[in-house]
Image (cartoon, rainbow, N blue to C red; front, side, top):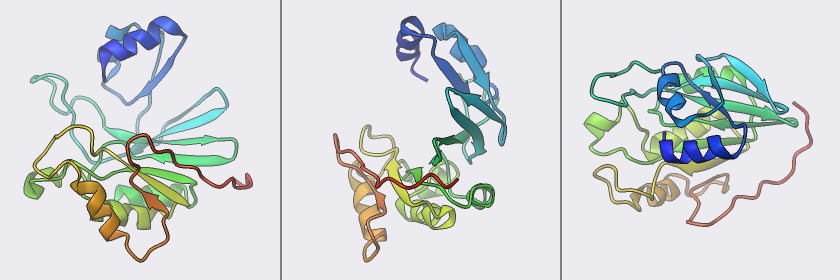
Length: 195
């Protein structure tokens, strides 16, 4: 929730901001003209896409006085016959099974793999690369892309460790789950819209 960036977006266009309950009061500080809060499993339609809020395991706090006063989650985005799941920031848990039960097919899952050490503390909020592979196996997307690693040193693991561990966890598998290098893009083969 980078307020300076959100203010720039608010000034340039009629941006729609979709969030989860409890974030409106912070988002309003940016001047965004349209804010929609979605509870888990609630959905909205915008510009030809259906966006559904999905569960995640994490906590929330924007100040020392609002611990867990906002809901944490991810989003399923459906448009033009494609499904993209953005897990957001989450720990491993049974919510992935619930998401797969609702969407048994998806084109792309965007999954976090970093900020996981020390494990005894961080396991409640962040997946390690091996757990991200478990989420990938549970969700069964056509492709997956790793996020939440390699930009800032957030926790005790080395900054390049998550990507390296993901490669090890995925060895001897087809390259369907990838941790992109800085500046790299992911090109997905076009699929016929059957959903």
